[in-house]
Length: 78
Image (cartoon, rainbow, N blue to C red):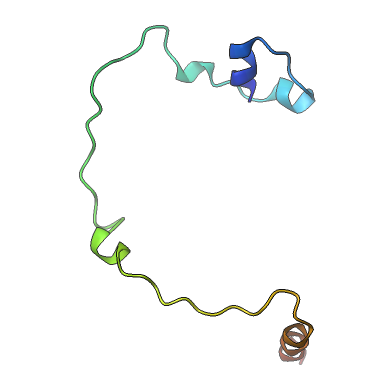
């Protein structure tokens, strides 16, 4: 946010914005128009073949269901 405020010339809204890190070091004064070259996918990190197969979802308990909360509490107490 601090970088956006500085670009727009807007003062910080609060102390957190004023003391936040600035991203100005991430930018240069002249742009680099060299085309981006993507690296091939490392299958140790991400396997596209398995990403297409959906995982069978495990049904979760209804939120704030008193019956489920009681059952979980009973299972937790010794």
